[in-house]
Amino acid sequence: NPGYTCGFNAAGLVYLQIEVNAAGKVSAANYIPGKSKNASSCMVEQALKYAKLSKFSPGEGSATGWISYRFESQ
Image (tube, rainbow, N blue to C red; front, side):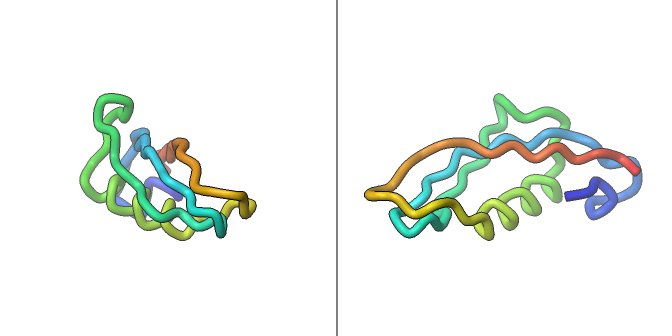
């Protein structure tokens, strides 16, 4: 997700912990501020939105993991 969606010269890293259900859909996403860098509220909002749209291979149960989104200034 390009940085310009959150304003001019926006750059940062948003780190999320996610839970994926057996169908491969993200059922929960939580922002982890301690592992993120220069993340504005807009970046966090965009990262959570895109994480919840992510799809993974179906499995036998739920799984946890992480996703990081790097916003680059344009």
